[in-house]
Structures are given as structure tokens and as C-alpha cells.
Image 1 (cartoon, rainbow, N blue to C red):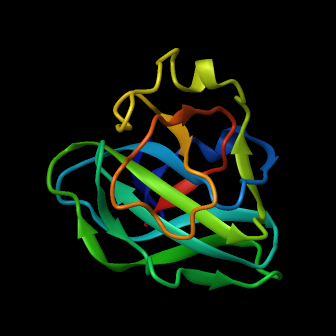
Image 2 (tube, rainbow, N blue to C red; image 1 turned 45 degrees about the vertical axis):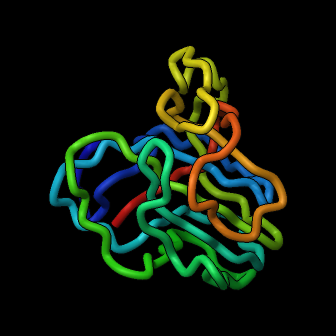
Image 3 (cartoon, rainbow, N blue to C red; image 1 turned 30 degrees about the vertical axis):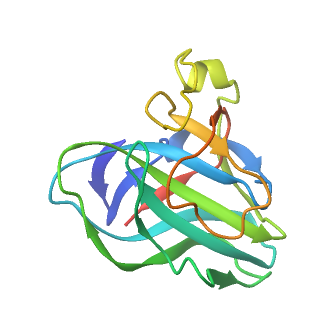
Amino acid sequence: LPYNWNSIKYASFDSGVIAGTFTPTAGVTYYYAAYLTAGTVITNVGYYITTGAAHTAFCGIYNTTTLLANSNNSTGTSVGSGVTGLNLVPLTSTYTVPSTGVYWVAILLTGTAPAIMRSTQTTAAYTNYGATATANSLATSRFATLGTGLTALPASISGTPTNQGGMGMAVLT
């Protein structure tokens, strides 16, 4: 959703269509396509925790192939087991969108992943409009995952993403 509402500059889906929770797989990066306008300043990547669990979050912003901005990629951001609600992970520095277009928000959780809000649609073919994922690129994916056993965000997209449905909600502030 391209908007700026209550300091949220992007959300992966309308919060009015929340249908339950989703528990991400630890060590897998989740990517969310985001249409961003030039000049938008991003300081945080967030997700809404419904059931807390002690974990470490690594978050970032990609173009189709490359990590552009990220949270602390060497240590991540520790999140306690009692944390619920909107969890904002700060980027190491603000990111100003250079040109209007599609970018990808990335969330990687390690440790015990918490339950986070998800949309009503859980079918990958619907959420990705029938697109087939492209090797070494996010260009044809709206919601996708990539990697296993990761402990930091990759510098570039390597491998073929798996298009997904029903992933958790991602936001940018």
C-alpha cells in the first residue's frame, strides 16, 4: 500500500484484512514488495507481534537483487519474549528512496520466532498474481521467502525465491 498514515509509509497489506497469526520459520528471509515514492525517508522496518518469543531480528530494504539498507546485520536487534504489538527495528541509518518504484522489505528472524499478524489470503498464486519466481531476483515476487539457516541478511539475492501467501505483516516508518 503506498501511503503515509500515522507515520507508516508502507504496509504489506491493509490492517483491515488481518485474519490471524503466522509464525515465520527462523533462519528464512521473508520479502515483501513495497511501492515507494522518491524522497520517502525510512528509519525502521516493523512487524506486529501477537505472541512474543525471544528472537533476534534482521531487517532491510532491497531492490530486485541487492541489499540497500539494513538494521545491524552483524548482531541484529534482540527482542524479548514478552514483547507484543508493533515491533520497530531501526535501520543503521535512514534510507531515502532514490526513485519511485518497487522495493522489497526483508525480515529475517533467528531464535524462536514469534507469532505475527497475517493477511486473510494464504494462497501464493493469489498473493503473487500467478507470477513464477525468477532466479537471483525478486522482480516477479510480491511475497516470497529465500534461504535457510541464515543468521544475517544476504548482501544480494542468490537462488530462486519461493513465492508465498499468508505471510506476516511488514511495515516501514
